[in-house]
Length: 384
Ligand SMILES: Cc1cc2nc3c(=O)[nH]c(=O)nc-3n(C[C@H](O)[C@H](O)[C@H](O)COP(=O)(O)OP(=O)(O)OC[C@H]3O[C@@H](n4cnc5c(N)ncnc54)[C@H](O)[C@@H]3O)c2cc1C
Image (cartoon, rainbow, N blue to C red; front, top):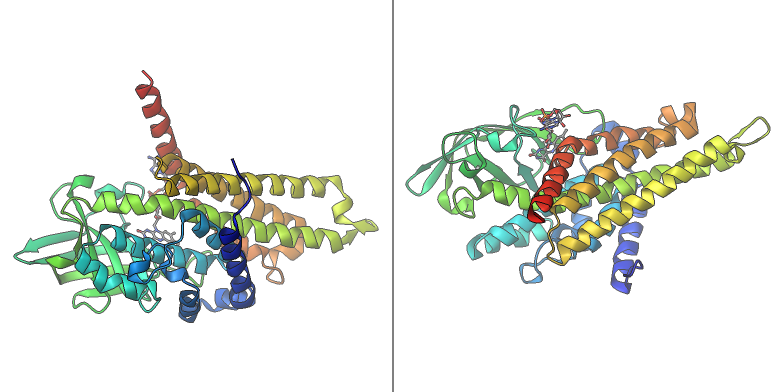
């Protein structure tokens, strides 16, 4: 077993680190304060191949491994979690179209998405169906060679800014997952409008918006996969999405840890720097231990996805552990800075506000534990 990155992986990580230091870190505070979505950054990320990370090269993508992707998301999140999350959603959508789309659909959408000209969004959740996502009620009714969409979706990251929406809607009556199908809907389609933009605790530069469909007619050729396959498509992209969010959490925690470590080396109380107090040293040591453990779990889950192994449980473990860890680490980083941690002179209060949502989206951490427990019980049953 090797723990070192190979040359290509190190190069990708260093490239993402340089990009973050130059293009994200200096601006993240202002974007947060002004609720500004930096669309122009996606054009720059596209130049580095980051908007096509999940797209095969024949469609203009860079087809990075999940492990290389995790390295990129960790680095981006050190500068701006909102950008890392927006990019992860975009790549999730692009990857789903590249994987589940037919040739015509791939040719139509993936080159534009991979080149960053088009931005993607993923729409599964609704007001009444969050954790119980399979009970969604947005309808897609078949009429000859068209579908007519009616309903409201919620919580859409990149909502309003994105050009391409991967939409899960119900094609048969009822509440189960087998009646859900997946569609690609373009911004500007008549009958497709945007509702309210959420006012959030953190992640201010990532728009989260409601989608409204009122007799929105789309050609049947915009259905992705077969009727009834939509929930499977949604879940398949969630596994890599969860690994990405785990990596994002490691990045935010690492950034918070660095600020806390530097501050503790400079701040003096009782005539000595606070990093000489064992109470502070132990907080820093615990942060370092947990960040490293989470990073290894994220890399293991990514490796399992890359090598085609059963990865669902590991993706959930990585997401759950890394995001719980990052919540703890960012909270303790604020603590190490004392009053200075609670004000906007330092970025740790933003890290703490931003990271909270990572325990909620891509499946709450309670749902991750449900997934893990189910997999453990199934393994037990198989062993007899
Ligand atoms: C900023 C942000 C961005 C988002 N982006 C997207 C996006 O791009 N696309 C998208 O489709 N969705 C998105 N979401 C939605 C997100 O995935 C949901 O919020 C999440 O799945 C939880 O659903 P809910 O909010 O309805 O909570 P609920 O499902 O109502 O859960 C409420 C509480 O009950 C707990 N709970 C529920 N069921 C169980 C159970 N079986 N066992 C134990 N506990 C349980 C939950 O863990 C939680 O603590 C986003 C959400 C936010 C906040």
